[in-house]
Length: 360
View (tube, one colour):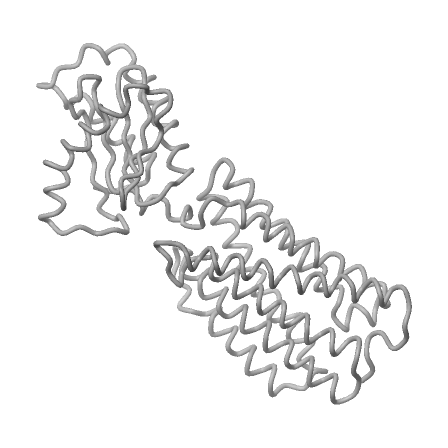
């Protein structure tokens, strides 16, 4: 088996240059995301930043091995580099798929993780002439379908700037996978070496767009933003609690004693703190109070407080949505309520649970 580029030429030089650039960008972005994940206070192996760093490293290895196979080797040596490339790619896909499966609300029973492991084994034992068709017509559609479902899940769960960058992530993936497809042997055999050159350019563009979008997404933890809400409190102008919800499904669990304390003395302390720091209400949006973030939004005749474990832009959007709907619903009675008749806010409590997607 001969190398893709048997002779030197402009197409070879362009393709090689862009593939090397893609490798460098992948490594740089991988190190950046791994550092971001490592320095995160709440880092877990389910974090997509960790997954993305691993996937980018696997892509960098895959492209490096394919540089050796497509530009510098032939015969059995080329087959060896191709096998190494497939193994690296499937290792990255296995980790990335596992974390995607955990993030999805449905139980996939680890199907795609097992699929990735089978790809690693298959890359080592299946002849390349057969493997290249299996990879193209079996593995590729399945992994692409997983990413498509995961992308739909991201878009559904996101809003505002997060949705924009989530869309960019999907666009970058589409460009990257198109470029990768143009560099495989079947495409080169059908279209010619210009297919490889165009594919290399697409891969660089795709890697940059995907990594740029990931870099600008405030937090991948926004995907489960509702589980990072601990408490939601609605206060009257004079500091009376109109509604107080404790999120039963919060990531940070509390035992009965601490929860009771948080809703009692600690709640009073939080209210006093808020009243002290919100004298200039136009400049205070969030109070960073150790392990919790106290998000504030002032309405016409109330103060909305959402206590979370992280700074979450989705929560800010939800607070604005609740404020608008609450004011429309209670605009005629906000100044006439009685502490003896807080049941009038029951509809608002139900609306709050629906908007913030919590159960109490």
